[in-house]
Amino acid sequence: MWLQRLLSGAWPLTFILGLAVVPLQVRGLNNGLALTPPMGWLHWERFLCETDCQKEPWRCISEQLFMQMADMMVFQGWLDAGYQYLCIDDCWLAPERDANNRLQADPIRFPGGIKKLADYVHDRGLLLGIYQDVGKKTCAGFPGSKDFYELDAQTFADWGVDLLKFDGCYYGTLDELEDGYRRMSVALNRTGRNIVLSCEWPLYARPLTKVNYTEVAEYCNSWRNFADVSDSWSSVKAILDWTAILQNSLVPAAGPGAWNDPDMLVIGNFGLSWDQQVTQMALWCIMAAPLLMSNDLRDISAESKALLQNKEVIAINQDPLGAQGYRILTRWKKDSNFELWEKPLSAISLAVSITNRMEQGGPRRIEFSTTMLWKGTVCKKKCYITQLLPTRQEYGYLNITAKLPLWVNPTGTILLRID
Ligand SMILES: *[C@@H]1O[C@H](CO)[C@@H](O)[C@H](O)[C@H]1NC(C)=O
Ligand SMILES: *[C@@H]1O[C@H](CO)[C@@H](O)[C@H](O)[C@H]1NC(C)=O
Ligand SMILES: *[C@@H]1O[C@H](CO)[C@@H](O)[C@H](O)[C@H]1NC(C)=O
Image (cartoon, rainbow, N blue to C red):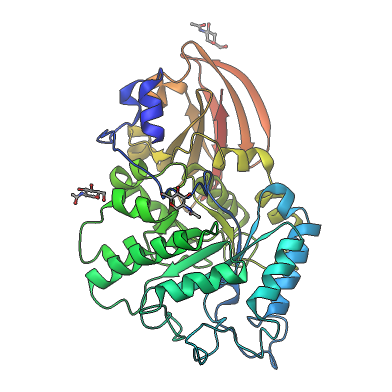
């Protein structure tokens, strides 16, 4: 959809260097939601499936954990920065459905039930996300939604749920997988409640078939394509490389209401260096990814918090055009281990990231020039360059022949805004 808006504007068709430009008739799931990538917090990467609240009262998956995170989101500026969805992942369920086949939260860890938690979250201006699975069981072995799509959709609506992360473990056959996602999407719509649907359809379907992203986008607001992120640079790197390799099919599918989901932000945890945290933030914004943090908001460094709450950086992600950025395949990458990505923004602006993919040595210099972008056509004579990450800096106007020397740390990224 953004592609069509671009093509009807002044943009040259050649802007997607190396991409086959096929103006798809993409229509996102028509529920009016997620017109910019959803932002919030999701428990999985940091808290996993800890169910022992005796031994791990501070970390177990319980209503107390979510209430504490809700308070942090409000009082520590996260909600103001745009992080609105507080999302529960797997392991919230009781081992069995109730006598009427309705889902129920674990009675010991969620004594008030999900309805009470939703009220608590809504009272603070936040929205609540929950997790289920298209198959017979969730990935952690709790009751899945298979055979109960309509009932479960209604249960979530009755509780006041605002987002559903719908996983794909134990899906059965490809037909059952695809049919399950379609049915849950329709069932959520029929409840009449605004519920964002976050799917994992392409992740599970890709090994079996060619994914039809036009169709996925008709049923889902966002969708996972690749394996779970973990708290490591190798994981972040792998997700970036997978996305770049498949960008011909992924990028045209994205737009308002329909997003590729490269999985959670792990900034503020243990595995990423400062430069790697900057890289994840910059590239997740360039990719128009849902910004779902998985970290402990009760205990996060001031630096990571400032990075995650950087309003100018978030504005790149939330730009209303809704274009997903892409890697530019130029000689700059091959020759130098510098990787450049760009993301078209509304008002004929552009975000550009420059990552140093060398993992040895010190800061390396790149002579940045606007001719590296859009075949140099981004701004006709001169561009105004603002560096947003790792620190803010205004470089002023750059004409088409000028070169701007920039130094990028190993595994780090410079994020520029070009107006
Ligand atoms: C349900 O789908 C219809 C048709 O696509 C749409 O107009 C409506 O807004 C949707 N309602 C909800 C609650 O998602
Ligand atoms: C992909 O899905 C769309 C929408 O459901 C459909 O119109 C189109 O024919 C499908 N494409 C292929 C190749 O199956
Ligand atoms: C471009 O900028 C450089 C450095 O500021 C300047 O020396 C040069 O004359 C400019 N070229 C044009 C065509 O404006």
